Length: 382
Image 1 (tube, one colour):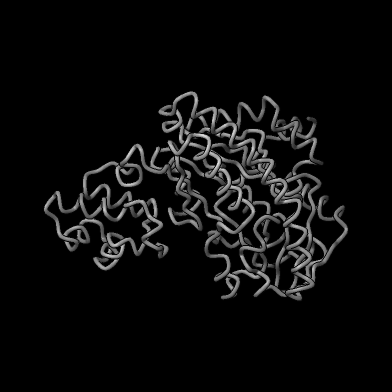
Image 2 (cartoon, one colour):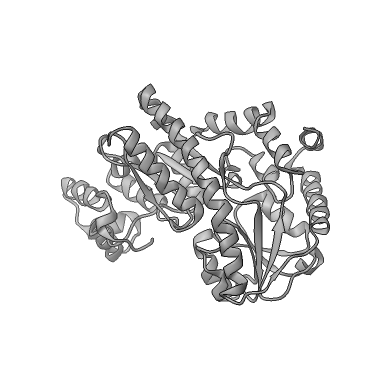
């Protein structure tokens, strides 16, 4: 559980304390019921610690309250918006702009409180909380939505699309509508920007402890992965050793030698400070723009008036333009600083070899059952 400043919290700890006292329980009693140390419960109630979704669910069960009681008790209070990225990243700055626009356009009726750096849990835990209605909004890369829409796994792997137009044809296709948008909606998650207009740069950087010029150099590398069958399968197909590390722990994992290779989107590499640890970086350009998907709990969405729903759409579109401008300027500045200011060499390899290797690896993941061959061919023919 991350430490936090109580001035930034909206009363989760206070509500836990009130619920506990209303039941005549001591912190020691709740500790026995939940298995959490009494010192942690004390820190949570004093708002020194922010509980993750699983921790809060555990406490909620002990106190016989629904999870949303603690996160969203006051209907007039701020809506919760979760993310695993830092507020200083391009996507984090876009999230802050989105929150500002929503508050301005509703004259303060709707406010968003952003929980950054996985304060509410891992990507999977936050997505589950979103589906349950425990948190209002969540933003992340499309791959993170794979647990509720399996197609998000393979199609959002690097180099899946040929170019920007191919990518956008997919987002406008009936395949996306049926297998991504509707699948998520069936699970209680509504995507607010199905066209993925929050563009965050067209390249990623492969940070490593040794130079990586060609895909063959990945063989045997301990490369970070996340809890995605498609991502794990891809890394194995490339000959690397995938190591599961949650986003909020990547710096410590790289520093401690748990991983020695890390793929970071252009929008994030400045904020994760890999320049302090990595010896090399390899520039991988996909030919299309990586995006951030913004989703809202369908349960929460249905409680909003049509005018507020319209405001969300407007704010999403305006923030998309803002996010694209940020990406177009900041990613190039950060890339320049990486080599010129921080002294990390950036390798610019021929992209053809990388695309060919990744495409072959993606086909292998499809053959392993993660994507039907017919679906793969249909997607490639768009």
